[in-house]
Image 1 (cartoon, rainbow, N blue to C red):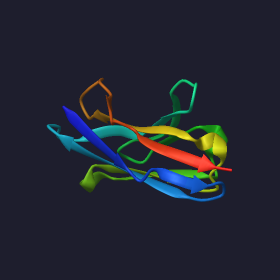
Image 2 (image 1 turned 180 degrees about the vertical axis):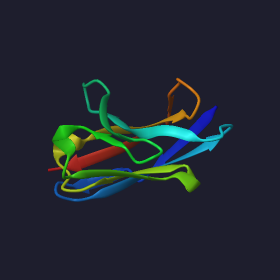
Image 3 (image 1 turned 60 degrees about the vertical axis):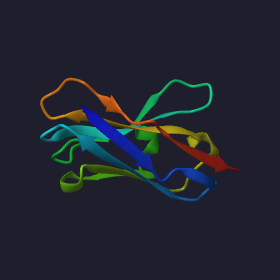
Image 4 (image 1 turned 180 degrees about the horizontal axis):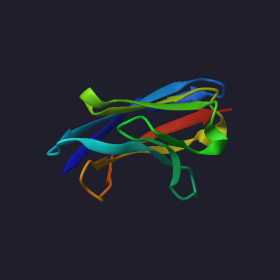
Length: 117
């Protein structure tokens, strides 16, 4: 079992920045891929970015240059730095993590990001 707690969401003006954090806890020896997905109003959940334990990154092409993902393995934590935010970045951002020897993905409760124009 993996519990994920996100933080760092909030209300920001267009052009601003936010940094999301997600801390994992529970009964696992190590974590494999961790990352972020988001769900905008009336939209399906979509990939933002994921990062492997070794630092291999998958990020949505449209977000490259504005969003950066990173992690601290020793802290079981993944971060999402979001710069130059746009109103269309508004949504609930969900953290995900997969234990090292599992095929199951675990999800956090989500943190709201609202970008005003």
